[in-house]
Length: 110
Length: 119
Image 1 (cartoon, chains in turn green, purple):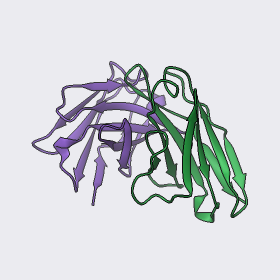
Image 2: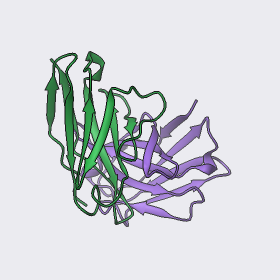
Image 3: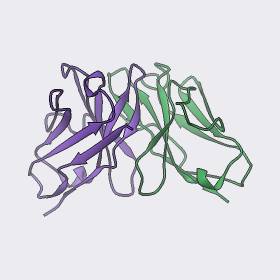
């Protein structure tokens, strides 16, 4: 199972919006609505931001939103803040009854 | 408060074995599937293995299949990962992760335990 494809880095200024893509195949991202997004700050464990393509767990800021089109999922961060500087990972359940992660995207707040 | 505490990491020679354990607290362990996810130094996340709430169904990544075995003991509230035939490329922080029930996602992560495979 190949990793999902994410851009290595994305940057934006405070207050701006940025979007991270996550491209898979018809066997993972395109197969089900089971795409998740997690945030990881340096030296910390990942934190779940989005599940089921668009749903935010309780306590996650509504500045984080997500969507999916065919084999590509998207995470948008609105009103970018300094604390959003981190790595972001998408993941998807697959038709092989397994999970696959993206390579990760480093978000830099300029 | 949900907590997941991993233990058992360390330095092991190529071809060696190691057993990781995870001690959860703050929730009813037997109600949740559990997973292991790893992260090589400076790299991204990689799914390793998972086990359902009863322990009757397991999942394994192709890269570790037939070398790693996941198990759980609901009476002791522990989940373990037995790793054999370890390779240098298995060097990583191994995270114990709770399943987001029924949603094919992961909602809580431990702080991880470092496994280093080197001679």
